[in-house]
Length: 86
Image 1 (cartoon, helix red, strand yellow):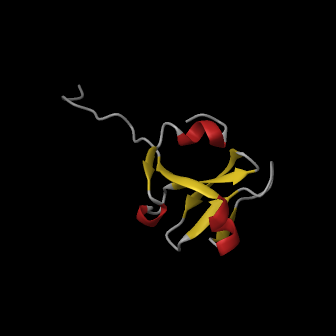
Image 2: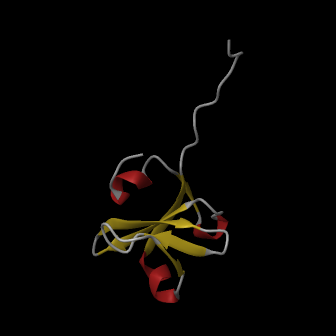
């Protein structure tokens, strides 16, 4: 996965926010660009780092936060392994 949130959105499978499952990513705007990314938790919260170097926090998806969301994405999984391992 790329480092920046804006670059992380493209390789993800884009999904409706209502279809998001724990582990899916939510992308949010800061001005006119995708700048924030958070991970949906089993409790329906968004796990995100508040600033560089700070511990990640779980926050509720408030109406204010929901208004900044530009999309949800499911990260690509590892490639399928076929055949036998020797």
